[in-house]
Amino acid sequence: MAYAEETLQTYDLLAPTTMADRHALFAKMRSEPGLCRVEPFGAYTAARYEDVAAILKDPQRFSSEALAVITEPPWLGPNPIARSILSMDPPRHPPHRALLSRVFGPAGMARLEARVRMESEALAEAAVRRGEVELVDAFCFVLPRNIIGSMLGLEPSTFLEFKRWAHAMGMVPSATTPEQHAEIRAVVREMKGYLTEVIEARRRRLGEDMVSDLLRAEVDGQKLSDEHILSFLFLLLPAGMETTTQLLGNSALTLAQNSEHLERMRANNAYIARFIEEVLRYDPPVQLGFRIAMQDVELSGTKVPAGSLVLGLVGSANRDERMFEQPDRFLPGRDKGSQHLSFGYGIHFCLGAQLARMEARLGLEALVSRVSGIRLRSPEIQWLPGLMIHGPAELPVELVPV
Ligand code: HEM
Image 1 (cartoon, rainbow, N blue to C red):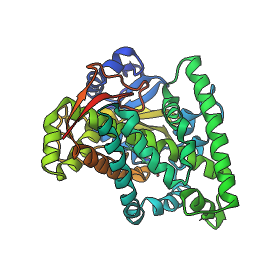
Image 2 (image 1 turned 135 degrees about the horizontal axis):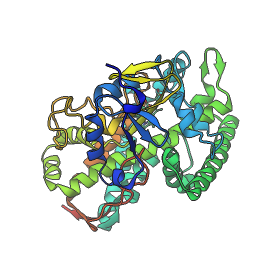
Image 3 (image 1 turned 30 degrees about the vertical axis):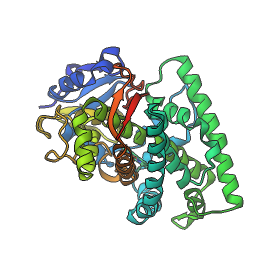
């Protein structure tokens, strides 16, 4: 049976009640017979695992060019991220993906491991020595920032604005006020200026970094244009920082709220990888994926007209009771635990997934080997605004040394 447009429930994802308890709303949406409509965008929205996976894995029916619609709203104008690999469909996507895959493949990750370990140890040591710290700034953000910065060959003294930039880019789909719009416009201008200078400097003198690799690379026998490289960097810089920051932040918060996990990690390093996988499922840093219907399609009985914006709620899919037993319980090592959709699904599956997992694993290893407890200094958790990126905005904690 197909559900007609007028029978679909509409939900407001930006309403304060949604933000306060998104899982109650997601559960309600999963229990609807078909898809739902949501504000913002009036998008057709899938909340069940099977439907979210179906949308993410099928570029023939659901195009990633939706990213251009989402990241270039009329109030913003041209945004290079809209032309990045993330918004490409086949046949353009595979050759660009192959190019980047070389860097993110097993050999590239093995080369990076020593660097990630060294950074993790140094940052954990400094944070524990200070005792009382704001952990997002002192650890969760700087670790991935330093790693992506060195992968791109960027000068550490230029990292100052990166946090503001990464936040602003993650806010584009949910920015509503004129102040937020103005801030994001300014950030796009600043990032364009900074990254254009990086490309120009590297063109004058190639090195052993990803920007130089992109300048040397060819796709279908042609060099990439500067505009193209800029769009890659516009994706990679925030993607390399903001998401992994939230994975580390959500992990640290879980450890602070339940010290049993910390003890189990200290007793057995292997528990860390299982714990990280469960944090990814339970609290995915990226909560949604966007697509555009390329033709009239029917999903779970709902007719979606060609050209409609379609949204897959990853945060809901990961808590779907049809897929995961007792989905609202945090159970590292659970059955099907790595089948969450937090890194996407199909051809756009996150290229940085192994890097993110490695940063989280080595970061937590360095931290938990030095502390016997993480105490929150405030019971109130201040979450990041917006619906796209999920994690604590700050984590004032006391680190209790071993
Ligand atoms: C916990 C950390 C991370 C999470 C949760 C995450 C999440 C995601 C998701 C959900 C997608 C697919 C989006 C879609 O299908 O529309 C994606 C794609 C991507 N991610 Fe990540 N990401 C993380 C870390 C990273 C890192 C560290 C990097 C790079 C340094 C990175 C680079 C990319 C790239 C280049 C793509 C596009 C792949 C393609 O279009 O083929 N990500 N990521």
